[in-house]
Length: 89
Image (cartoon, one colour):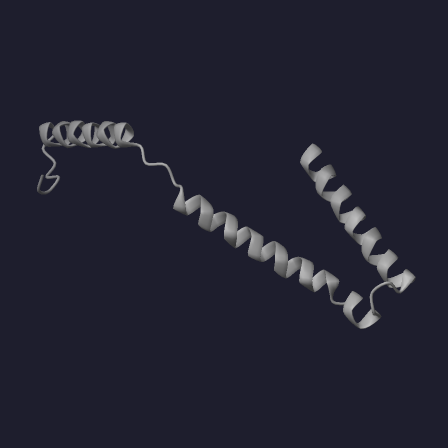
Protein backbone atom coordinates (compact mmCIF):
# COMPACT_ATOMS: atom_id res chain seq x y z
CA UNK A 1 0.00 0.00 0.00
CA UNK A 2 2.87 2.39 0.76
CA UNK A 3 4.32 1.83 -2.70
CA UNK A 4 1.03 2.85 -4.32
CA UNK A 5 0.96 6.02 -2.24
CA UNK A 6 4.50 6.87 -3.33
CA UNK A 7 3.57 6.40 -6.97
CA UNK A 8 0.43 8.48 -6.60
CA UNK A 9 2.40 11.21 -4.83
CA UNK A 10 4.93 11.24 -7.63
CA UNK A 11 2.18 11.43 -10.24
CA UNK A 12 0.55 14.34 -8.42
CA UNK A 13 3.88 16.16 -8.18
CA UNK A 14 4.66 15.65 -11.87
CA UNK A 15 1.14 16.74 -12.80
CA UNK A 16 1.47 19.86 -10.65
CA UNK A 17 4.77 20.78 -12.32
CA UNK A 18 3.27 20.18 -15.75
CA UNK A 19 0.19 22.29 -15.03
CA UNK A 20 2.43 24.98 -13.56
CA UNK A 21 4.49 25.06 -16.75
CA UNK A 22 1.34 25.31 -18.84
CA UNK A 23 -0.08 28.16 -16.73
CA UNK A 24 3.12 30.16 -16.27
CA UNK A 25 4.08 30.03 -19.95
CA UNK A 26 7.71 29.35 -19.01
CA UNK A 27 7.85 26.74 -21.73
CA UNK A 28 6.02 27.35 -25.02
CA UNK A 29 2.65 25.62 -24.90
CA UNK A 30 3.40 23.59 -28.02
CA UNK A 31 6.32 22.00 -26.15
CA UNK A 32 4.57 21.81 -22.78
CA UNK A 33 1.78 19.65 -24.20
CA UNK A 34 4.36 17.07 -25.27
CA UNK A 35 6.05 16.83 -21.86
CA UNK A 36 3.96 13.80 -20.73
CA UNK A 37 4.93 11.99 -23.94
CA UNK A 38 8.59 12.81 -23.32
CA UNK A 39 8.23 11.57 -19.74
CA UNK A 40 6.72 8.25 -20.85
CA UNK A 41 9.41 7.75 -23.51
CA UNK A 42 12.12 8.62 -20.98
CA UNK A 43 10.72 6.15 -18.46
CA UNK A 44 10.60 3.46 -21.16
CA UNK A 45 14.24 4.10 -22.06
CA UNK A 46 15.20 4.02 -18.38
CA UNK A 47 13.37 0.71 -17.94
CA UNK A 48 15.14 -0.83 -20.93
CA UNK A 49 18.47 0.44 -19.63
CA UNK A 50 17.85 -1.14 -16.22
CA UNK A 51 16.88 -4.46 -17.81
CA UNK A 52 20.05 -4.36 -19.94
CA UNK A 53 22.25 -3.57 -16.95
CA UNK A 54 20.59 -6.33 -14.96
CA UNK A 55 21.25 -8.82 -17.74
CA UNK A 56 24.88 -7.73 -18.11
CA UNK A 57 25.58 -8.25 -14.43
CA UNK A 58 23.38 -11.33 -13.96
CA UNK A 59 25.04 -13.39 -11.24
CA UNK A 60 26.14 -16.90 -12.03
CA UNK A 61 25.86 -19.46 -9.29
CA UNK A 62 28.15 -22.42 -9.98
CA UNK A 63 27.33 -24.04 -6.62
CA UNK A 64 23.62 -23.92 -7.37
CA UNK A 65 24.26 -25.38 -10.83
CA UNK A 66 26.12 -28.31 -9.27
CA UNK A 67 23.29 -28.91 -6.81
CA UNK A 68 20.79 -28.82 -9.66
CA UNK A 69 22.79 -31.38 -11.65
CA UNK A 70 22.98 -33.57 -8.55
CA UNK A 71 19.20 -33.34 -8.08
CA UNK A 72 18.65 -34.20 -11.74
CA UNK A 73 20.91 -37.25 -11.44
CA UNK A 74 19.04 -38.38 -8.30
CA UNK A 75 15.69 -37.95 -10.04
CA UNK A 76 16.89 -39.98 -13.04
CA UNK A 77 18.07 -42.79 -10.77
CA UNK A 78 14.77 -42.76 -8.89
CA UNK A 79 12.79 -42.92 -12.12
CA UNK A 80 15.01 -45.71 -13.51
CA UNK A 81 14.31 -47.75 -10.35
CA UNK A 82 10.59 -47.26 -10.97
CA UNK A 83 11.04 -48.60 -14.53
CA UNK A 84 10.72 -45.33 -16.45
CA UNK A 85 13.06 -44.64 -19.38
CA UNK A 86 14.57 -41.17 -18.83
CA UNK A 87 16.72 -40.99 -21.97
CA UNK A 88 20.43 -40.72 -22.42
CA UNK A 89 22.74 -39.49 -19.65
